[in-house]
Length: 253
Length: 75
Image: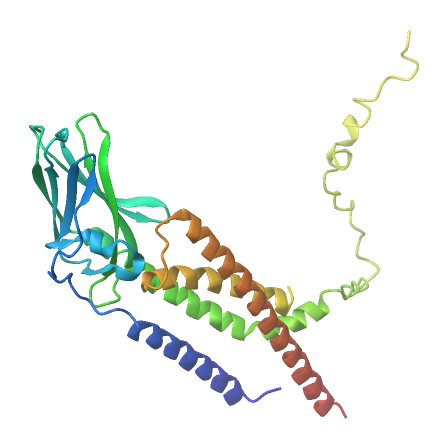
C-alpha cells in the first residue's frame, strides 16, 4: 500500500504536466493581427478576358493563395471585401449580380455571405461586401480556406478564388471548440496516466466467480422456480396453458 | 478491460483531439475533407498505438508494485 502523499504527488505531477502542455500550446497561438495593407503585388486573375480581383481590407487575396501565406485576421472584427471585375478590350462583358464569400471547415461551408446587386448590368464594376464573423469567432479559430465567387444572374459562377485566413478568437483563446478540446485532452491524459490500475482488473478477468454461500438454515424453503432462461417462453407460460398449443392426442382423422 | 486497451482508448481520443486542436491553433489545414480524414486516421492510429504501449507499461508497473507490496506485507 503506497502512502497517500505519494499518490497526491503523482496527481500533482500529472496536473503540472498538463498545465505546462496547455501553457505551451497557448503561448504558440499566433498573435491577433489584422491584414496589413501591403502593396498589391499579385496580378489580377484573368478569365475570358475579364480581370477579377478581390481585396480583403485592401489586401489582394491572391497573395494568400496557400495556407503558409494565410492572412492573419481577427475574427471578432469586421472585414471589408471588395469584388472588382474589369473587362478588357474585345472581351465579352460579363453580368455579375452576386458576390459570395464562403468559409470552409471539414469540407463544409460553415459561413456564407452574399451581396446581391438589384440591377446588374454588363461591363466592369465592383461589389463591396462586409463580413463580421462574430458568431464564428465564439466557436472556432484557426486556419481556414475561404472562397470568393462572382455569380451571374442565372446562378453560374463566373469566377471563384480560394484564399486562406488564420483567424484568432478574442484574447487569443476564447472560442468554445479549443477550450473543450483542451479539457478533453487533459482529462484523457489524466486517464492515461492512471490506466495502470486497470491491469488488476484485467488480471482478474479470467478468474471464476466466487462460489455462492450455502443456505443459512434448512427451514428456508427452496425457490419456487428457477429464474427463466433468456429467450425461453415455456418457463413463463402458466400451467394451464401448457397443453393449449399441443396437438390433441389421437386427434388425427 | 486491461490497462493496454484502456490506454488505447485514451490515446485514440487524444489523437483525434490533438488533430482538431492543431487546426484551431493554425498548424493544420482541415478545410477540405480529404486531408482531414488522413490526419484523423493518422491521429487515431498513432494515438492508439502510443496510448496502448503507455497503458501496457503502466499496467506492468502497477502489477509489479502491488506484487512487491503483497510480498512485503505477507509474514
